[in-house]
Image (tube, rainbow, N blue to C red; front, side, top):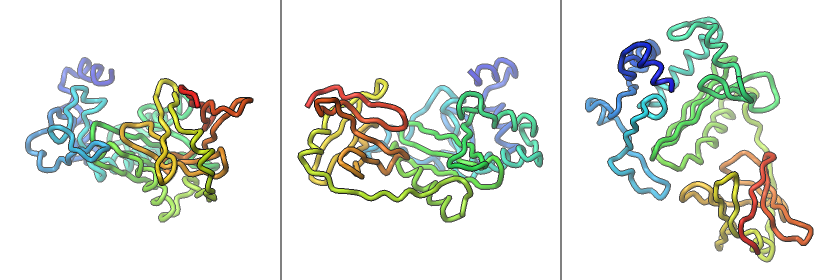
Length: 275
């Protein structure tokens, strides 16, 4: 929708308008919305990989929707966007947006959703962080900036497996002493008898997304995204966590002790088979 509005109002191709009015003012000289990418930049483009390690056909996918999926960029350029946003919010710069507009853009409208980004307090505290994740076929990334000071990081992978993104962001926050971003939670992993874990294997549904829990010699694994299998770590016979997501999960049973699903963050995945 934003792409159509820009092209209708300006009567300019979207990629050219964005280059002249957004990318160049921000110093994002290695970035482009051109689809397909400019031939001059082909040597700089990474090859995307699926979760099974296979290359994306043609190295990368070409998306017709430029605004939603057409930005070619790198961590350094995206960091320039974060820096300008922080400076503009503090009233120190207006290369693209005025400080007033930046303050409006970083004000949540619904829950933590603001205009083109998400703004929230990561832990109890006054500092707010704005972030947006990205993902096209064979690529995943995240960009994070503190609304109230100069902290920020951009992490990019050329893989559909983006499970390492949050771990890297948390590690950066610890090393650079980011305030109000991440407080490590120490969990004690316990061994659960095979007779109990066997009852948890099966199929589940989470708001239309199929989830399977399988068992191997090394324990239980949860699969919810493509070929990604996340190891389940138990803290009790029914409580568990996954390293890839920040949540505590719990298997649920009915009055007859049949496993009916599992819950986390107030959401329940319902079992769709019986055991």
